[in-house]
Image 1 (cartoon, rainbow over the protein chains, first blue to last red):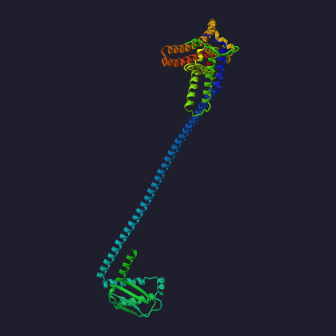
Image 2 (image 1 turned 60 degrees about the vertical axis):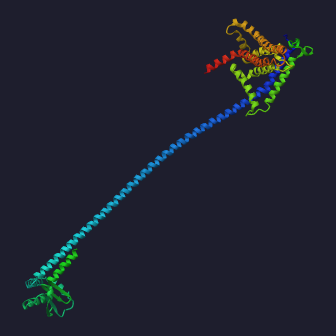
Image 3 (image 1 turned 45 degrees about the horizontal axis):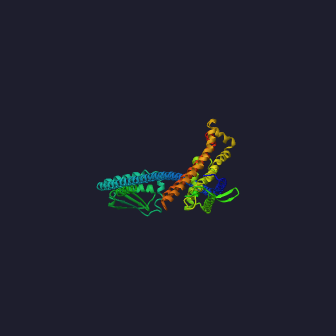
Length: 249
Length: 232
């Protein structure tokens, strides 16, 4: 156990050389590669964090987009519901209008039917009245009624004003050869003279009068002057009454 | 067991320079460690293989051990402390090889390493803190402790050298004695103990050296911690 100074100094030198060797060939390269690996890991971690942040951002963006889509969907649904409601209201109004028109048509048709029915009833009543009156007058017709009608004819012709008498001058066209007088019952001579005198005065004609008997007239006279016909008898009055009923219906 | 087993004799003398087996063995150890380091770091890759993983694990363990004691000066003191651990482990284990003895069995070698530790404490302290700040730490916590601090600087260095030398020499002596008394293969358990003791002594030597260096840097660390607290 002694201290060899040569060994002591050489060992110092040897150890310092070994420190340099290990620092140069072991510590520095290993620490560098560890540092580079740590840096690479840090870089990867940073990239991972960045990707994570980007993923979070994308997630939030997608969530916002989903929320927007949901909002838009809800708005579209609301608009659709509103359009459906508006369409329903329009259809309801249209249906109501159609129903109203249909009701109006029905009412008009019913009114028309009622009027036609009333008119048919009135026509039928008129026909029945006419038939009743015709039967009644046919049963009641007789010489007395014809005399009354004859008197009424004479009074009417006699009461014609001058302008009407003058207007009658052209009704029969050319001067007729004969004047035909038909009656339900035979006229006596006195009545014939009164009638001829009245006709001569009113028409201004001097044509001979030919007398005929027509029982179908029931009562009264028919006077034919050319194309002009003067009727005052029960049959034609009833016929006129019937035609008047038809015209009114 | 002859006198050669107890004393280190020079095998080559050239003037004042004596080449002993300790120096030769140290060169062999240096060559092995240097070659290993060169081979290990020749093709480093970002995705390490098993061998590279082992090397990186060793360096990382050394780095973490230093960081636990002196977290602010890892880069500066790692080469010296790490080399202490690596060299002493290999040097201690060299004694297991038949015909060779550990360089650390030589007091000259352990004293040289301890002397380097002694110098490194002051070197790192003055280099990182400045001469004035470094010398002031001998007066703390009280100037009365200055003589004790100075004495401890010497005694702990001697203790480092003698502890490592005594343990390694005693181990080899025990192994030789057991071999001579019990015969071949009998000292195998002692050799197993040699391995454990070699690792433990290397760890103790390196950790003590680290603590000594860190204690020289302690005042700067405290000052930086205070500055950090003030900034915070």
